[in-house]
Image: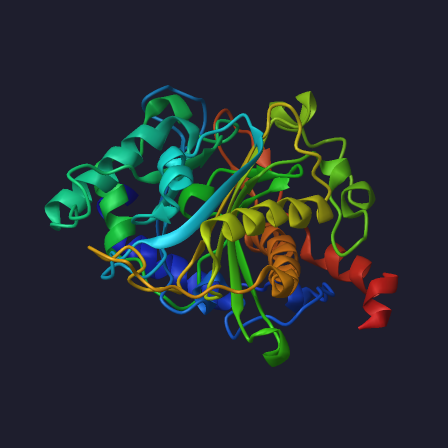
Length: 386
């Protein structure tokens, strides 16, 4: 079956999986903080997520034919039907990667349109496809050109990445089916073929809700994780990667043997009214959530983060001037903490949801074993404190 011909069905299956698959909290991981109802980026009102998953073929790599283990994920800050720009800021922890459109985000302070995430060699196609979608839907209104934000991580350990299997129709499918509610995790969308800390990686999400005293704001995070080496993996302070070593009979994929050559893209959303400079500060804090899971952002890792706020609707309205609200810097620290906590959990959720996958040339990447994780969490001092 050619899965490319059935993007709507892919979305339905992925969403059903998201609703039934166990998540890290259900396995006893003692995370800090209070999650939103969905524990997802879509807990931030208005945010919608869409994805298209492409899985086809097996066996020997034949460039241009497969095996195919890839896709695309999109995040709309205000939903598919609301093109009003949002204040945004971005940060590169290590720049061996790509996130297009960030020079304009830096210059203007605004994110215009969705954030796309895919594999390294499909960034240009996804970028151009988003522009084409804007044109077809009459959405290019702010200026007569478009500078979409599209990021990537490398799935060449499992996917025929040089076969360029993501097409415009796949991007359109992700854009047209984006919605709120539960967010698919694991081997879905842009995260389909990703490897994280030597285990199967992919897309993951989480959220935090601040107390009323701290403003009651929500912070949501979505990651596409493809970073780290197995010995680095730390979950809730437990050195899980060292305690669950690779079986000698299982050949590790080449990037794991060579070192930390993976990447991670992190999207942070909030309904707190923040200015672009403050959102850049929020994006930087994603680094600390990543560090909690053990990554040291190696030389070949592309660790690039973007944060946006859904507050201040109409901040770019012409002709202005426009009144905007902002949290004071003296009150921003709880949002930093929420970002760190949600980032950590989103990464672990991605690994918990991911399933063992075999890709090109029979390369197999094992999923993080749920039973072993549960056992380690029960024995951890952190669990006793909850």
